[in-house]
Every structure is written in C-alpha cells, then in structure tokens.
Length: 322
Image 1 (cartoon, helix red, strand yellow):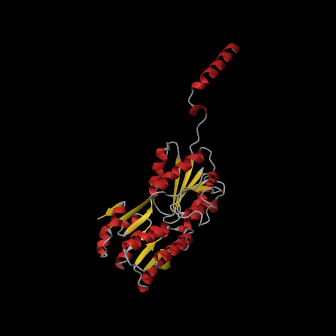
Image 2 (tube, rainbow, N blue to C red):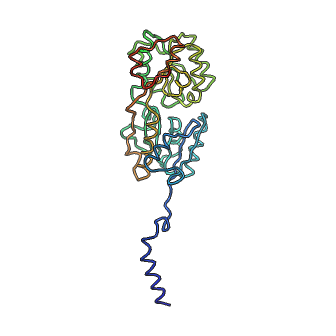
Image 3 (cartoon, rainbow, N blue to C red):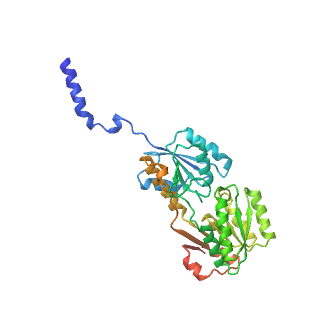
C-alpha cells in the first residue's frame, strides 16, 4: 500500500506541469465599468479592446452604465460600479468623469473623452494627472478658437456670434474663456447663452433671434448631445449658420463640425485600460490630447441658408455632405 501511495504521488508531481493552467487555478477575468451620460454603447472602445486582444464576455467583462441624458443619475451609477469592485472605470464625458471621481479615489479611472480635464478640475495637469485618473482629452488648447476661425471664414464679415453652453458642465467655463479670447482676436462680438435643459435651449434660441446673432457655436455637452436634432432644427429655422464639436450635428442638418476624432480617442482609451490591468498606475500615465481634427461641412444646409462656402474651406474639409 505504501509503495502504491508513493507511486501515485510521484505520478501527480510528474504530470502536474502538463495540466492546463486553468485546471490548476482559474484565471480571474478583468471587470471593467463603463459610465456615460448618454444612452449608447461605445463601439470605438469595444473595437479598441479587441485590437489589443480583449473580447467582451471571453477574457474581459464590461459593465455598461448609461444615464440616458439624465445627469442626476450619474452619481448613483458610479457608486454602483464602485460597489461591484470593478478593476477600472472608463468614463465618457466630463460629467461622468466628475461623478466617478467623487465615487472613488482608489479604483483607476480612464477618461475616454472629456473636454478639459485640467480646467474642469479633474486632474492638476495632463503630463502628471496624479490621483486615480488618466485617459484622453477631446480638447486641444485652441479648438474653440479654431471653430470660431472656421465660422468667420465661412461667413466673411460676420460680427455677432452666439455661443450656447451649459454652465453645469465642468469643462464649460475654460472653453468659454478661450472663446472670449478668440472672439477678441477675430473682432467678433460673442453672445454667450446658458442652457441646462430643453426649455432653456428654447429660451436661448429666442434670445439669439432678439439679439440678431448672425452665427452660432455650440459647445459639446451631454445635454446638448441628447438634443442634437432639435438644436440643428432650431438653428435652421432661425437661419443661423452653426458650428459644432460633434459629427452628429451635421448629420442632423447642422452646417459644420470641427472637432477631434472621437472614435480614435475612445479607441485609445482601451490601451490605458490594458496598461492599468497590467500594473501601471494612472498617476504615471499622461493624459493624451488629440493630434488630428476633422472638418465636416454640410453643403445642402449651406445652400438652404444661402451661403457659398469658400473653396479654400471646402478643400480643407475632411468630408463634404451634399
């Protein structure tokens, strides 16, 4: 009996290296939370994961949480992800980032898109984000200025431009300061109008008409994203040539979009998740800014507004919708 036991023990020792690792110790699948103020799954982030070897439901699990345009839901959704003890929280937008930051100072947070992480107080600097946040920013330091510049090029001689923004958005104030500086340089009078909901958007458009604004800039905001069609229609009804920071607006009939490529930035967020899952600390991962910007022009809208877009601008456009 003793010899038999010794023989079996030796066999188990010899065969152990040949058993699959999973049979010896189940490998833990990473759990990632994704928080957004909107209501749709981020296919760019999902593609980014697959490009570096992560497939949802196989070797990574993503818990998607959508506020569906209701910003007051974000804190509860963020707290829910924290209770689930996710390995990383990915956030889309400044409001989602703020909610996640308030919910935890230990779980790593990756920003898939936020307009101004420094100006909104999310991080002390892009190069050294400190704390538990890192990721990508949709904003370069001069994007709003570039939008105003494109608008004045499309409408030579324009002197009064309305700017729609949400004061509750943490990234709004820094953009407003940049817009004011750019307007002074371009010799444009800026009419800033606040809106936090659909009713206030209506009020803002009434004020634009009353003040005889000749063009419109709409800052990127989750509330406005859920009102894309309505905003584009209001601008068209009042014959206001407009420029935006999201492609959805030109697809809804807006005149122009000048923005970073959100697909590329959100796809890049997956690489931050990968680095963190492999042991990197968010504080040591600088926040990336966009290096490429897309200009999209809706010529059909231009014709409806009676505008002739300069050929120089059309040649620079990444896409022209006819």
